Amino acid sequence: MAKRIETVELSCYYGKTKAVDDINITIEPKSVTAFIGPSGCGKSTFLRALNRMHEVIPGARIDGKVLLDDEDIYDPAVDASAVRRAIGMVFQRPNPFPTMSIYDNVAAGLRLNGVRRKSDLDAAVERSLRGANLWDEVRGRLNKPGAGLSGGQQQRLCIARAIAVEPQVLLMDEPCSALDPISTLAIEDLIFELKDRYTIVIVTHNMQQAARVSDVTAFFTLRGPGEPGYLVEADTTQKIFTNPSEKRTEDYITGRFG
Amino acid sequence: MTSLTTAMPGLRAGSLPRWGIGAAAIGAVLLSLLLFAVTPMQGTADFLVFAAAVIVVAITVSSWAVEGRRRAKDRLATSLAIVFLILTMLPLGVIGFYVFKKGLKLLSVTFLTHSAAGVGPLSSGGGIYHAIIGTLEQVLLASLISIPLGLLVAIYITEYAGGPLATAVRFLIDVMTGIPSIVAGLFVLAFWVLALHQGFSGFAGALALAILELPIIVRSAEEMIKLVPASLREASYALGVRRWKTIVRIVLPTAATGITTGIMLAVARVVGETAPVLLVVGNNDFIHTNPFSGPQSSLPLYVFQGAGSSSQFDVNRAWAAALTLIVFVIVLYIAARLLTRRNALKQR
Image (cartoon, rainbow over all chains, first blue to last red; front, side, top):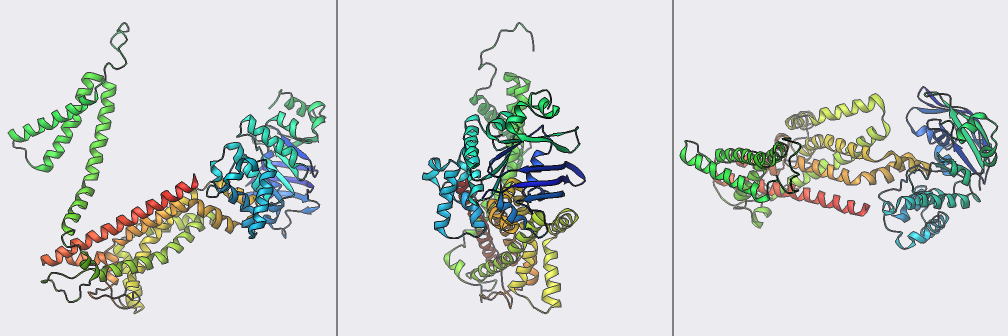
């Protein structure tokens, strides 16, 4: 189910501006990989390039390759929608569909991709909500609006919505930055459970979070304002946080820079 | 700021009590009455304007005396805002009152269910059933043309067209908004009725109304679609949902409330259009239900012709028809509000 992602000389552009420069990284299946780095270093851009969400922004394009189990997702014959079904995404701010109930939010991905049978949807909704640790809190009010939940619940609803379409990889763009510590803890626990089944990539500004949840940590930075971001090193989280190979990584992690 | 040693006043000190404002206003009215009694000033409208001005001055002055300059400015601004609000609402109220007063005399079930067939200017009776039919059919047809077109154009300029093309379309739509209704009528007259030999018909009127309705729908729908947060589109794309499905199932439902209101306003706007209908619908005192051939009537047209007549019977009938038209528009507005509220509740 979980698949490996590998990028080959991946650069991302907004119009003429290069935002991310020449990144080669391999993201192993059934593991959690954290991207850390200062603001503006391109980690979110790079993340969005991994499931072709980058190109949704007008003028945005990439150079290089992204391989999902050796298949280039930027091959002209590949359908972007199919890529995004295989590589799901959770955003910084919870964004449940405001016109839909909790049930409909979770079922949205399946319904809009053609699943019709009620029993299939019911099963998928329960499985996804259980997977997102939200089932017990919402089981009695599945037909209430998703926007009526608390921020932390909304974010878990968005995770449930993302895993309902059974992706192989789950990308999370600072999923806890808009949440309080208790909701953050709930999401971190969830990430820990989800890695048994999915490849997870998480962008975070919170280094403790990276240290807590991830197996591998990749450190991004930039040479100066307006310069493209680049990958400094990627290694096991243990090594990055105790004995990084690069001086820049150590400076960032110990708080001397960034 | 007289002196730093001034004792700290109580919390309620230096503020005008509620009755103080009322007293100032009543005093101002009494003063105005007195002035109108002893000076050559006269007339109801003059009195209202004069009294309003005196009330504003009285409230400001008394506030200045008791509360000081800062509060007095606040009172002045507040009372000016209220006075202008009333001045703006006044014409609306007067029009409504006058039309209801004049129109209710004739309005009856008979009036609403009979045509004007065989009813001359010198006879009473007759009705507007034929005009109601005409208006309903013409507006319905116009909406059937302009709502789908308008929505598609709005979707196109917000979701698909980028850069100069969208700007060009938007500019053309703006120009269309500015088209005088008589020009829309003339265009349909010259093109559809005369050049294509289609003759007068309700459908020709519907075409002219559609030209007027289209830009209103496009602009309001465009604004509403733009308000849908990009994060919802992204959430949908990230689920692997295709673009058109994202638009149809996520974007449009989210904007539905506002789009509905915009459509209702556009419909209400063209219901009362006289000029285009006057040119291309023809005229018909008989009940004519087929909008596609032969002249029809319509409510604005009926009002226009009746109001210009020298017969008091015609004028009275025009008032009753005008009232019907206004009630129809009000009902539309209320329906739009109710629809909006129902959807808003569902979202919470």
